[in-house]
Each structure stands twice: as C-alpha cells, then as structure tokens.
Length: 231
Image (cartoon, rainbow, N blue to C red; front, top):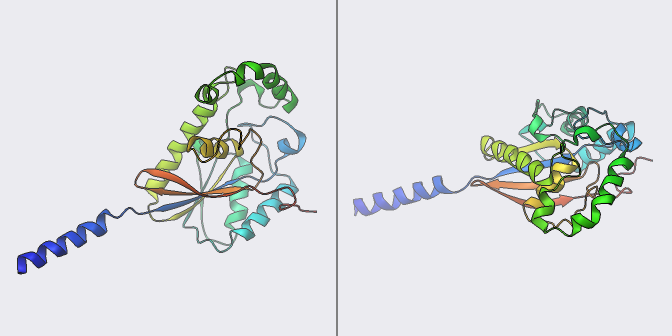
C-alpha cells in the first residue's frame, strides 16, 4: 500500500514538473517616425519618433495599462526603444536593446525616397507573382537587403531565446512592422495577401504564446488611422 501511494505521488510530482510553462510576448510596432512621415526607406537607419508617433504610443500604452509586464525589450533603434519606454510608463522596468529585434535591412535603399523602392518592386511584380509562395518569401528587391525569410528567421530566433529565458513571464517587445508582418506569415497565422507589405500599423501589436519551444499567435491588434488619431 505504501509503495502504491509512493508511486502515485511520484507520478503527480512528475506531471506537475512536465506541464509546459507559458511565456506571453507582446510585440509592438513603434509609433510614427520621421521617416514614416516623410516617406523615406528607414530600415535600420536611426530615425526618431514624431510628436504624433509619441501620442500614438501613449494611446497603446493606455490600451495595455492593465498588463503586468515582467520584463521589456526593444530593438536597438531609437524609434522602437522610445515607443517601448512610453508603453512601459511608470513600471520600473529597464529595457534591453537587441539588434536582432530590428527592422529589415534594406541595404543601399536605406535613406532613399520610398517611391524609388516602390518603383523597383513594381518593375519586378510580374516575375514576383509568377513565383510560388515559398519562393516569394525568399526573394529580394535588391541583392543586399534582407528577404522576408531572412528577417523572419532572425526575429523568430530572438523570440525563442526570449521566450525560453523568461519562462512564465510576460514580456514587452518594441519592434517594427517588417518583423511583425513576417512573423505572422511565417507562423502561418496570416497569408501574404492578408498581410501585404505596409499592412501593419504604427503602434499596433501582436500577442504571442511561447510554450515548450513553440510560438502561437493569440491576438493581433492592427489599428486603423482613426483608432490612433491624435488630432
């Protein structure tokens, strides 16, 4: 009888220890930047928030006011770091900056007017849409920029590291549209048609669940211009 009780107790203990612990990740796109406003390809260039962008961040901060963040991260770029700092608000959290959380590298196109990038994409559109979905994810407009696939791989690797490191905690991450969009597509939550380039709004966010080495999308907040209006 004692042996049976001991075995049952051991199984209960093992069951408790094997239960996956979830990490919650909130990934927020930065507020409007000067480059956004002026239609400049920013990529990994350091462009600050506009006043409108700071107000957008305050609106999202209020939306997430009841979330008990345990830790905060951002990319190394000022627009993402300042947005994270505004959302953190009065919470006593330091913000760890990681280059792996940054926007796509656009190579030699960074700092150029956005219409130049748009023209290059338009010129390649026929060949692009003749490719399979997987091939599109790996294609590049110019050779020295990151593809969707490369961006997604870099960003998801960082999320896995953060999720594993902060098991059972709630994490705020200030980041960018490109990584968020390719994460949604890479995880199979949305298709390219449902989330085209430029389709994720300033200060929108996604909520992810990390558990047992897997990442799942649990919420997408992609606000309209009216929802984040600062007028």
